[in-house]
Length: 442
Image (cartoon, rainbow, N blue to C red):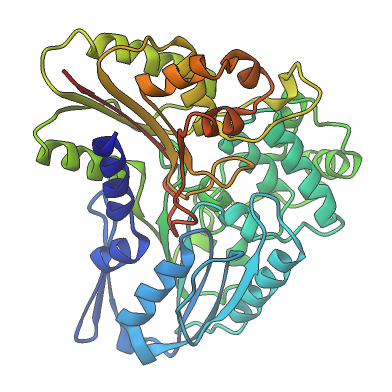
């Protein structure tokens, strides 16, 4: 168990936003270089800019802003960021707004309006850094004209409960928003240089999906958003459906598309992703002489399906004669709309995956499986995830816990708590999806 927990800690350290900004942004004299994880590079002479501003929203934005402000110091003229309630913010000189996630609230709207006021003050010779990370969709809300915040909250809540993917949810959110899907750039002066530093919480690292892509071209359409609403049977939210139908018939302006001149002075730079975290875990295991296999960062199945895959992996590893570990990342989903129980319990996708694994895992050898959200928050619980060992399964049996019943009512938290199998981190200040690790010691 200690090795698995150590690997998860290493994953969090490697995806620390402040570290990632320092690694990506370098200032030498007046030359500022910005590099993304794929080798893309931007060089700027910061003495050529009249003013430099910092804006952004997301779970990791506080740490990102702190690191960037340390690099640029007094060169920053001002800015505004929106972060989750309780986030540790040490940055001075910026307007800080705390708001709600995963459902937006009025504080989030107020924070977005502060950001817009900053952007409206820009001029042609200015530079704006936009800091975006997971949670940015909820923390950067501004409903399109004629829509209410409560409508957007309802749509988001229903899509989340129905198990819609983050990409599908963002397709809808972009078309109900005045800032998402590239629309944030509508408030920036023409010719103003914009550099977005982006920390990915999206499987596949689609920049247009991270925080709903406020500075990224949006290839999706109003018709695509309508299709998502129909797929998950959310069309009864009348105000949202009317607005989307209005847009589909040309009555509301589409999001800016690839090739639009609004993006000519914009650079979107990806500075970290799920692999960044997985790599930290992989290197930790290797330092402890454990043969490690990386299974990619693309899992996006149901949490129960992920649990079954992990249980199958346990069976495979148990036949090996050497110490071995598996590391994988991504983001599973939980479909609350399909629940049989009338009342939903406490838990999240990572805990549900672990409980699903426990249902199928045969207690054999020294094996540990863990799943964790890198942001430290899993579902509607205060846990980051769960961890299971043969001892956990033994405790379930000794205490007469019917794991399948807990799983059926999505009450993974209370089941895992009885076996001392929850992982707690508190808010980590980062967000690069989820990570699952398995360690077997013969």
